[in-house]
Length: 356
Image (cartoon, rainbow, N blue to C red; front, top):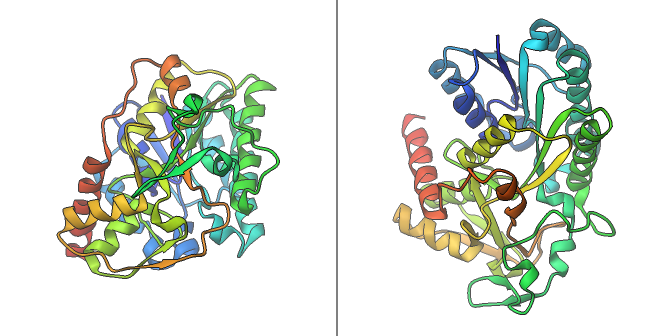
């Protein structure tokens, strides 16, 4: 039997992984205990998404386990053993603002939880491919020291710095910078996954995501930029822009496109490889530009305010350079641009609000 195991299976990338791999594996085992609701309250509740995938995919099995508990994980890994061929680890505390509230919780979920999963994999299914969703926050504030110019609606890289024309690649330093506690815990996990590949020869891949998005995101104020923005556009709830004149830029990758990257890696895995994973030059947007898109798609005027105080560890301009991944896996490409993604997000949120 071939089994895919997905942590954070009721979240955005986890549920997309379940959907993507359901017809490629005999069984998909999901691990998710809805800690997102603990992190972000009602907006973060993923129970609706867990119910959706349980109803839709007959070969999906859900386990409400805590990745911080070796004992709980050991039960699952012992049950499925070497039949597990793929682990997609998406479970995380994903907000740098929230991490400062409970540093022990943040680190135990992001770093210790990742170590637990790596060790369970090494003990029970060492030949499995292990995919980790890292973050561009491992680079800390270093992107903010790139040569940037201010345009009418966005910040952009200076034209005379051709090296960054396609975005930020994997050679940007992780050192000598402020990360936020969230960024630090993800750095620890990122390096652990690399080391299990390089030291133990395991098939581990690290994907440093920019903004990960899609219609099944339980967006909240502290995490889930496009999803929460569109939710505010639909409901009329007030949205707050934090700093940088609303011109901060993010690249956004649709969950399907990211999971398709995982699939390509699974078919030709490497040991301890690191990839930046985002929308790149194909799909990026500033806050002001995103607000305009949301207004056009929803037909509503956004209710938003501006705060001069930017979030600690926030990036002014971040666009991922995916040249390395595309060189290794030339059969992969993006399929969702910003507008197509936002239309899907709008329709998904509108449907859930209608059914609520």
